[in-house]
Image (cartoon, rainbow, N blue to C red; front, side, top):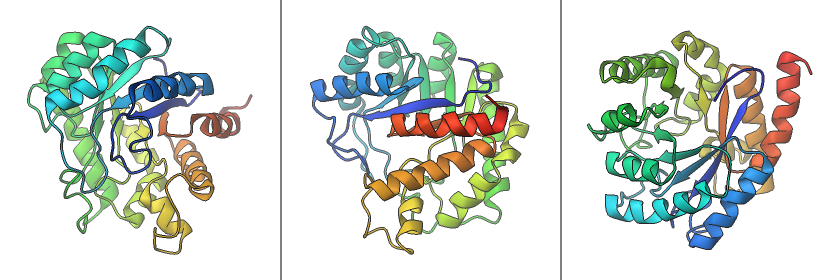
Length: 277
Protein backbone atom coordinates (compact mmCIF):
# COMPACT_ATOMS: atom_id res chain seq x y z
CA UNK A 1 0.00 0.00 0.00
CA UNK A 2 1.34 3.39 -0.99
CA UNK A 3 1.17 6.54 1.13
CA UNK A 4 0.85 9.79 -0.76
CA UNK A 5 -1.67 12.60 -0.86
CA UNK A 6 -4.56 10.42 0.29
CA UNK A 7 -4.66 9.59 3.99
CA UNK A 8 -5.42 5.91 4.49
CA UNK A 9 -8.21 4.71 6.77
CA UNK A 10 -7.97 1.61 8.93
CA UNK A 11 -11.43 0.47 10.00
CA UNK A 12 -11.72 -1.14 13.44
CA UNK A 13 -13.52 -4.46 13.87
CA UNK A 14 -13.27 -5.82 17.40
CA UNK A 15 -14.49 -9.38 17.90
CA UNK A 16 -14.52 -9.06 21.68
CA UNK A 17 -17.08 -8.84 24.47
CA UNK A 18 -15.22 -6.11 26.35
CA UNK A 19 -13.56 -3.52 24.08
CA UNK A 20 -14.04 0.01 25.41
CA UNK A 21 -16.29 1.28 22.61
CA UNK A 22 -17.82 -1.53 20.57
CA UNK A 23 -17.27 -4.51 22.88
CA UNK A 24 -19.95 -7.13 22.27
CA UNK A 25 -21.55 -5.38 19.28
CA UNK A 26 -19.86 -7.64 16.75
CA UNK A 27 -19.07 -10.66 18.92
CA UNK A 28 -21.57 -12.79 16.98
CA UNK A 29 -19.97 -14.15 13.82
CA UNK A 30 -22.55 -12.96 11.31
CA UNK A 31 -22.68 -9.50 12.92
CA UNK A 32 -18.91 -9.24 12.58
CA UNK A 33 -19.01 -10.33 8.93
CA UNK A 34 -21.70 -7.75 8.16
CA UNK A 35 -19.76 -4.99 9.94
CA UNK A 36 -16.57 -5.83 8.07
CA UNK A 37 -18.35 -5.58 4.74
CA UNK A 38 -20.02 -2.34 5.85
CA UNK A 39 -16.69 -0.75 6.79
CA UNK A 40 -15.36 -1.55 3.33
CA UNK A 41 -18.48 -0.02 1.76
CA UNK A 42 -17.89 3.12 3.84
CA UNK A 43 -14.39 3.50 2.42
CA UNK A 44 -11.91 1.68 4.66
CA UNK A 45 -8.51 1.03 3.05
CA UNK A 46 -7.56 -1.62 5.64
CA UNK A 47 -9.72 -3.70 7.97
CA UNK A 48 -8.14 -4.20 11.40
CA UNK A 49 -9.51 -7.26 13.20
CA UNK A 50 -8.80 -7.93 16.86
CA UNK A 51 -9.89 -10.70 19.20
CA UNK A 52 -8.50 -9.38 22.50
CA UNK A 53 -9.45 -6.11 24.13
CA UNK A 54 -6.62 -3.65 24.74
CA UNK A 55 -8.69 -1.16 26.72
CA UNK A 56 -7.22 0.01 30.02
CA UNK A 57 -7.26 -2.71 32.72
CA UNK A 58 -8.37 -5.38 30.21
CA UNK A 59 -7.74 -9.04 31.00
CA UNK A 60 -5.79 -11.15 28.54
CA UNK A 61 -7.31 -14.08 26.66
CA UNK A 62 -5.63 -17.32 25.64
CA UNK A 63 -4.05 -17.79 22.24
CA UNK A 64 -6.57 -20.52 21.40
CA UNK A 65 -9.52 -18.29 22.28
CA UNK A 66 -8.12 -15.38 20.28
CA UNK A 67 -7.63 -17.65 17.26
CA UNK A 68 -11.16 -18.98 17.66
CA UNK A 69 -12.51 -15.44 17.55
CA UNK A 70 -10.59 -14.06 14.59
CA UNK A 71 -9.59 -16.83 12.17
CA UNK A 72 -13.05 -17.88 10.91
CA UNK A 73 -13.93 -14.21 10.43
CA UNK A 74 -10.75 -13.49 8.47
CA UNK A 75 -11.33 -16.58 6.33
CA UNK A 76 -14.85 -15.42 5.47
CA UNK A 77 -14.05 -11.75 4.91
CA UNK A 78 -10.89 -12.36 2.89
CA UNK A 79 -13.09 -14.04 0.28
CA UNK A 80 -15.61 -11.20 0.20
CA UNK A 81 -13.61 -7.97 0.43
CA UNK A 82 -10.83 -6.56 -1.71
CA UNK A 83 -8.82 -4.56 0.85
CA UNK A 84 -6.00 -5.79 3.12
CA UNK A 85 -6.88 -7.30 6.49
CA UNK A 86 -4.72 -6.47 9.50
CA UNK A 87 -4.55 -8.72 12.55
CA UNK A 88 -4.43 -6.78 15.81
CA UNK A 89 -2.54 -9.09 18.16
CA UNK A 90 0.56 -9.42 20.31
CA UNK A 91 0.72 -13.22 19.93
CA UNK A 92 2.84 -14.83 17.22
CA UNK A 93 0.60 -17.90 17.04
CA UNK A 94 -2.45 -15.73 16.42
CA UNK A 95 -0.61 -13.71 13.77
CA UNK A 96 0.52 -16.88 12.00
CA UNK A 97 -2.99 -18.36 11.99
CA UNK A 98 -4.51 -15.06 10.85
CA UNK A 99 -2.06 -14.75 7.96
CA UNK A 100 -2.87 -18.31 6.96
CA UNK A 101 -6.53 -17.32 6.91
CA UNK A 102 -5.97 -14.27 4.72
CA UNK A 103 -4.57 -11.40 6.81
CA UNK A 104 -1.63 -9.53 5.34
CA UNK A 105 -0.59 -6.97 8.01
CA UNK A 106 0.40 -7.43 11.67
CA UNK A 107 -0.67 -4.70 14.09
CA UNK A 108 1.31 -5.34 17.27
CA UNK A 109 0.63 -2.90 20.10
CA UNK A 110 3.66 -4.29 21.95
CA UNK A 111 6.08 -3.42 19.11
CA UNK A 112 7.36 -7.03 19.05
CA UNK A 113 8.14 -7.02 22.80
CA UNK A 114 5.52 -9.36 24.28
CA UNK A 115 6.14 -12.41 22.09
CA UNK A 116 9.74 -13.11 21.00
CA UNK A 117 8.47 -15.08 18.00
CA UNK A 118 6.40 -12.27 16.47
CA UNK A 119 9.28 -10.84 14.44
CA UNK A 120 9.96 -14.29 12.99
CA UNK A 121 6.37 -14.51 11.77
CA UNK A 122 6.53 -11.08 10.14
CA UNK A 123 9.86 -11.94 8.49
CA UNK A 124 8.73 -15.38 7.31
CA UNK A 125 5.60 -14.06 5.61
CA UNK A 126 7.00 -10.69 4.54
CA UNK A 127 4.05 -8.88 6.08
CA UNK A 128 4.08 -5.19 6.98
CA UNK A 129 4.12 -4.66 10.74
CA UNK A 130 2.75 -1.81 12.83
CA UNK A 131 4.88 -1.00 15.88
CA UNK A 132 3.11 0.94 18.63
CA UNK A 133 4.31 2.68 21.77
CA UNK A 134 2.69 1.60 25.03
CA UNK A 135 3.73 2.27 28.59
CA UNK A 136 3.54 -1.06 30.41
CA UNK A 137 0.65 -3.28 29.31
CA UNK A 138 -3.13 -2.78 29.05
CA UNK A 139 -3.68 -3.80 32.69
CA UNK A 140 -1.23 -1.19 34.02
CA UNK A 141 -0.73 1.48 31.35
CA UNK A 142 -3.22 4.01 32.74
CA UNK A 143 -2.02 3.87 36.34
CA UNK A 144 -0.49 7.35 36.68
CA UNK A 145 1.50 7.42 33.40
CA UNK A 146 4.51 9.68 33.76
CA UNK A 147 7.12 11.05 31.35
CA UNK A 148 9.86 13.61 31.50
CA UNK A 149 9.24 14.54 27.86
CA UNK A 150 6.53 12.40 26.29
CA UNK A 151 7.34 13.34 22.69
CA UNK A 152 11.05 12.62 22.99
CA UNK A 153 10.51 9.41 24.94
CA UNK A 154 7.92 8.01 22.54
CA UNK A 155 10.10 9.03 19.59
CA UNK A 156 13.10 7.20 21.07
CA UNK A 157 11.00 4.12 21.84
CA UNK A 158 9.78 3.92 18.24
CA UNK A 159 13.25 4.57 16.86
CA UNK A 160 14.57 1.70 18.99
CA UNK A 161 11.64 -0.50 17.89
CA UNK A 162 12.48 0.10 14.24
CA UNK A 163 16.12 -0.81 14.91
CA UNK A 164 15.10 -3.92 16.86
CA UNK A 165 12.83 -5.04 14.03
CA UNK A 166 15.64 -4.47 11.54
CA UNK A 167 18.01 -6.64 13.56
CA UNK A 168 15.41 -9.40 13.41
CA UNK A 169 15.21 -9.24 9.64
CA UNK A 170 12.23 -6.95 9.05
CA UNK A 171 12.81 -4.42 6.30
CA UNK A 172 12.26 -0.78 7.21
CA UNK A 173 10.03 -0.47 4.15
CA UNK A 174 7.63 -2.91 5.89
CA UNK A 175 7.30 -0.87 9.10
CA UNK A 176 4.58 1.56 10.18
CA UNK A 177 4.77 3.31 13.57
CA UNK A 178 2.00 4.32 15.95
CA UNK A 179 2.64 6.72 18.90
CA UNK A 180 -0.07 4.90 20.85
CA UNK A 181 -2.68 7.51 21.70
CA UNK A 182 -4.37 6.44 24.94
CA UNK A 183 -1.91 3.66 25.70
CA UNK A 184 -0.24 4.86 28.89
CA UNK A 185 -0.88 8.56 28.34
CA UNK A 186 -3.01 11.18 30.04
CA UNK A 187 -4.86 13.98 28.25
CA UNK A 188 -1.85 16.28 28.08
CA UNK A 189 0.39 13.49 26.80
CA UNK A 190 -2.03 12.65 23.99
CA UNK A 191 -2.41 16.29 22.97
CA UNK A 192 1.37 16.79 22.95
CA UNK A 193 1.86 13.78 20.69
CA UNK A 194 -0.77 14.95 18.20
CA UNK A 195 0.61 18.49 18.28
CA UNK A 196 4.15 17.23 17.62
CA UNK A 197 3.52 14.42 15.14
CA UNK A 198 5.80 16.20 12.69
CA UNK A 199 8.75 15.11 14.83
CA UNK A 200 7.98 11.48 14.02
CA UNK A 201 8.44 12.09 10.30
CA UNK A 202 12.17 11.94 11.10
CA UNK A 203 11.74 8.18 11.55
CA UNK A 204 11.16 7.95 7.78
CA UNK A 205 8.32 5.43 8.01
CA UNK A 206 4.55 5.93 7.70
CA UNK A 207 2.74 7.13 10.83
CA UNK A 208 -0.53 5.59 12.02
CA UNK A 209 -2.57 7.26 14.72
CA UNK A 210 -5.66 5.98 16.50
CA UNK A 211 -7.57 8.67 18.43
CA UNK A 212 -11.01 7.19 17.74
CA UNK A 213 -13.45 7.70 20.65
CA UNK A 214 -10.57 7.67 23.14
CA UNK A 215 -10.95 8.73 26.76
CA UNK A 216 -8.94 11.95 26.30
CA UNK A 217 -11.59 13.18 23.86
CA UNK A 218 -14.39 12.29 26.26
CA UNK A 219 -12.64 14.04 29.14
CA UNK A 220 -12.01 17.19 27.14
CA UNK A 221 -15.64 17.33 26.05
CA UNK A 222 -16.99 16.71 29.52
CA UNK A 223 -14.79 19.17 31.39
CA UNK A 224 -12.36 16.63 32.81
CA UNK A 225 -14.70 13.71 33.45
CA UNK A 226 -15.74 10.96 31.04
CA UNK A 227 -18.85 9.84 32.91
CA UNK A 228 -21.13 12.27 31.06
CA UNK A 229 -20.42 11.04 27.54
CA UNK A 230 -20.29 7.53 26.10
CA UNK A 231 -17.69 6.46 23.54
CA UNK A 232 -20.25 6.16 20.75
CA UNK A 233 -22.12 9.41 21.45
CA UNK A 234 -22.40 11.93 18.63
CA UNK A 235 -20.32 14.52 20.44
CA UNK A 236 -17.43 12.05 20.87
CA UNK A 237 -17.63 11.04 17.22
CA UNK A 238 -17.44 14.73 16.31
CA UNK A 239 -14.52 15.22 18.70
CA UNK A 240 -12.77 12.28 17.08
CA UNK A 241 -12.93 14.01 13.71
CA UNK A 242 -11.22 17.06 15.21
CA UNK A 243 -8.43 14.81 16.53
CA UNK A 244 -8.20 13.07 13.15
CA UNK A 245 -7.93 16.42 11.36
CA UNK A 246 -5.21 17.71 13.67
CA UNK A 247 -3.29 14.44 13.36
CA UNK A 248 -3.31 14.44 9.57
CA UNK A 249 -2.43 18.12 9.31
CA UNK A 250 0.52 17.40 11.61
CA UNK A 251 1.84 14.45 9.63
CA UNK A 252 -0.17 11.22 10.08
CA UNK A 253 -0.38 9.01 6.99
CA UNK A 254 -3.07 6.64 8.29
CA UNK A 255 -5.82 6.84 10.87
CA UNK A 256 -7.48 3.99 12.76
CA UNK A 257 -11.17 4.68 13.40
CA UNK A 258 -14.54 3.14 14.23
CA UNK A 259 -16.57 5.59 12.12
CA UNK A 260 -15.14 5.13 8.65
CA UNK A 261 -17.76 6.95 6.60
CA UNK A 262 -17.52 10.11 8.70
CA UNK A 263 -13.72 9.94 8.67
CA UNK A 264 -13.70 9.56 4.89
CA UNK A 265 -15.65 12.83 4.53
CA UNK A 266 -13.33 14.56 7.02
CA UNK A 267 -10.23 13.40 5.20
CA UNK A 268 -11.52 14.42 1.80
CA UNK A 269 -11.45 18.01 3.05
CA UNK A 270 -8.25 17.75 5.08
CA UNK A 271 -6.32 16.10 2.25
CA UNK A 272 -7.54 18.84 -0.11
CA UNK A 273 -6.37 21.49 2.34
CA UNK A 274 -2.93 19.85 2.56
CA UNK A 275 -2.39 18.97 -1.06
CA UNK A 276 -5.02 20.69 -3.20
CA UNK A 277 -7.70 18.93 -5.20
